[in-house]
Image (tube, rainbow, N blue to C red; front, side, top):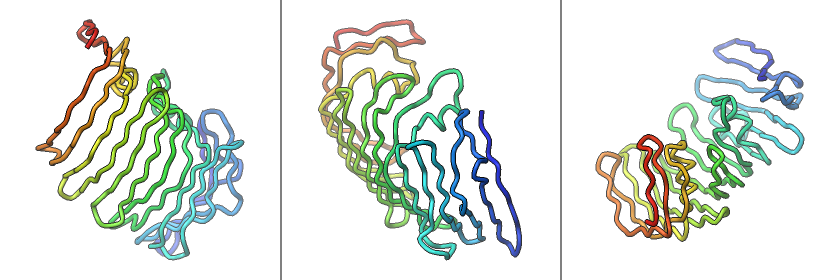
Length: 239
């Protein structure tokens, strides 16, 4: 079902990896690998050269912005199916599905990792429950501070989140504008601990504080909402 074949060489504290052109199989599907692909692992970083994996219109391309081990790593997704990877983790049911397009840049991978990403995840479903399309811009231009601008649309969902998270202080500050968030989407993220969900939630939230002492201010409205709790075998209606 899955296969990775390539060559590994070590010399002078460096590790060189290359994948064979026909050496990659994901979920029974053969993927084509660029002939001149190479990854060199240095003590201070990683250099990637034309690591392009493709299957029909779906592809991932990883390239370094230069030959120095500290050079940024660029990752480009083109119509990449999430289920290609999630089926590795869970085989009895589909954990998640959808299509990723966009780019990400990783800086200082070995020491003080920083990430900038601009991604579109289309037709996202979790455990078969429709979530929608996510447009996410994440910038980690300074150490430990992540700024995010995330929008959810489609499948009758309409949500916008804009804020920041500081990993060193475990603190966050975000505004969440919920025009409509379907209860079926909650059902998906609950790993099916909720069932028979209907209706939607709307409102505005101001989320701040730390992971140990969070603060959530605002108001939520349940619109003809209902759901069942699997473990309790109970149903809540007309909320």
